[in-house]
Image 1: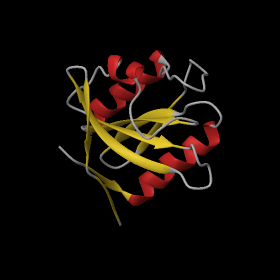
Image 2: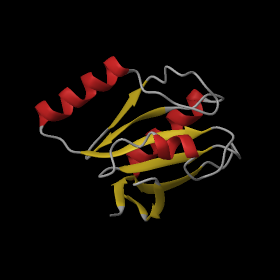
Image 3: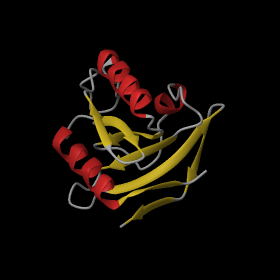
Image 4: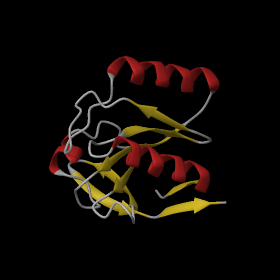
Length: 129
């Protein structure tokens, strides 16, 4: 499994992470779009997607016949790898997880992971034009 997304979508995700700073931002990535979801945890080190918005987004994806490509969240101050909490709460092992690290806010970094069975494996992230 690798993660290939449109570079425009990746830019939207990074901008969302910056706008959420200093708290974690989160959302979903479908084949052709980014769906920001409010982080009800309102935390600098944790995210919890708003359940009502998450259900609404999944319904929209299903109705449109769109596929969930990735789950995104940011690490405003943390490293570019999933935390233990991220790994524990990875409920969709068949979906890629995209992390945006703003440890250096002027130079955001991104990485993608497959999280399954309590382990996180970095996968290739490709942004296409």
